Image (tube, rainbow, N blue to C red; front, top):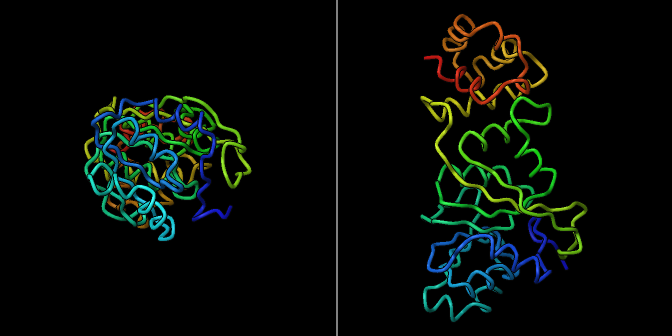
Length: 255
């Protein structure tokens, strides 16, 4: 089977049911990104979900429209053709999705910005491991910090390549994401995101040199000068992977 836009279709019915059972979806507004062949869509509809599915590929959209014509007619399923990294996303309560590997990061950040009760998402296992890597460890990165700032993440289970068609060359991991307010106050979410991105763009450098290297491109020169003057030496001399969530908040909250 051909892979559509980096999608690997879930064909193991036991895996489909395990994913669909990870959240209570009956009578809930459920967003599904990348429905593909509709296996997970079918499971969600069977459990009483009101599904809004976003699919990029026009051929798949046609196939899904034919397969689920009765559910579309009753309004239980809304099928939208679009790129989930940029198209409008409707209000939803829960998302259950097998995300395209290449777009996982962009879509995850969009979902966190949109807000939801719980997300059940499948990722490439390496991506999922980076997501749950604790702050202050060598494996943490921009993804780890941004997700863990605004959510708690629970690893559920792994799936082998044979659960998909075509088979990917890597294992996949299903996670649950529960949004929550930041543990440490953040004055400006957009500026916080810019600071985290800037520092991990220079992850091998100290915070001092990373901020200097981002001056003008990602961060305001006036703000960088003030941050370098006001931040404690302990933070300035550290590398981004050595910082904790509180440290990133401290840096970003410099007025």
